[in-house]
Length: 165
Image (cartoon, rainbow, N blue to C red; front, side, top):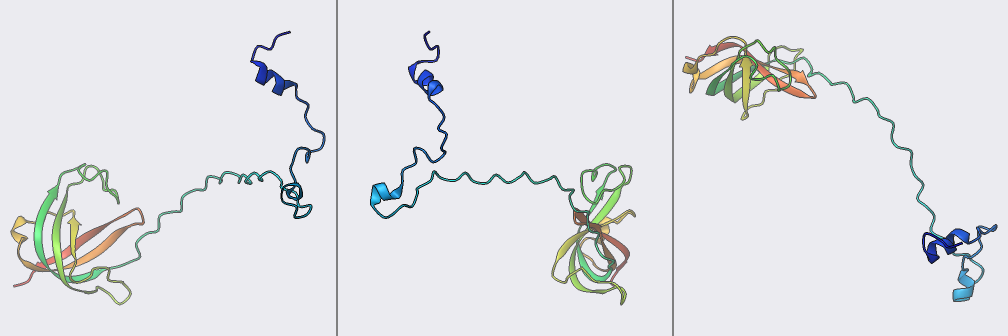
């Protein structure tokens, strides 16, 4: 009967499986004359079990904070409803927001039990649900800032805004 896969494949298919797993392994002694150490075929790398899918860690919220700042307003913007829907932290899709870009000059904790995350010599964008006028651009202001959100995203919120005379 002729082999359909070719002579090499048929000879491999008919070759007997050795009963001794060490059969056919060359010893180093026969090649190098250094003793009876056996040169075994390279060991297969142990296959680690695939990692079990672990749940991602829960988002860690920003700790309670509040900063009293003195800043210069660099820009004012309004954000129509739904314009920030793909940002974190999320905002209601039907809520318009207003923002000021602030160049912070000084910052201090708003209360003894609150951290101040606002830092002097930084520029941030702070949001408010209340309208903020473009007439504030270029003016020095004092304000309360609060950083809200979690490890996925944060947003500064501004309140108690006053123009410095």
